[in-house]
Image (cartoon, rainbow, N blue to C red; front, side):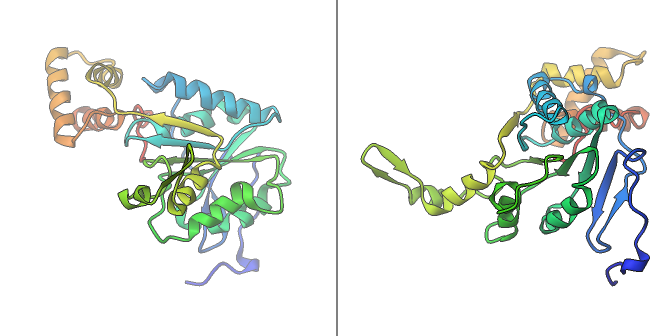
Length: 274
């Protein structure tokens, strides 16, 4: 399949009526998102501090005040992606827009930015489940885009990413074995410095940790708000479901609800992919 020719390109997106788009690298176009997950900040339980910090950072961005690129990292199914989706729904009426980019397409970021830099809206460029394998050179493109280019990024663009890895790359024991002490200072090996340098480009780090049993059952209760059956038995089955799934999470609560009674209208509490 060939890339979309100039004459075949769809018309530019009307950002007054479109709040989110996905970058399609093969066609080199932004495709408007037709159905946005109807998540709300109040739907997300157990991550109040993370919600407050990301909301504050994004509101500063909308107010044309200094704001940081954000990395949401931690355990899977704990609300990282859902928080970004809920934030978009909350702030879209105030001019926030979002463009989702796959990790493999990060090299296209300069082209994407060129498409939106003159728009009167504020854009989050969002990469879900961001990570790089050893030897993958594409992370260097991201480093350059975040801070390392001779051209400053436009004021209306901020980069948010989710990841299960704090430093976005594999961390091997052998990397730490190459560290050395000089005087009273610890000097990391070059491999470690390279990995830390990437995540350091994000001025806001938000960590998401595995949840305890009480919070998991609160999430189950929120999904089953109108449940008229035996609540104790429901909890017992929910705990067994989480055990079979390998852990408690908002995603597990939502999947348990789907198994029992069908889809959750708001795509479930913390129902993210990362």
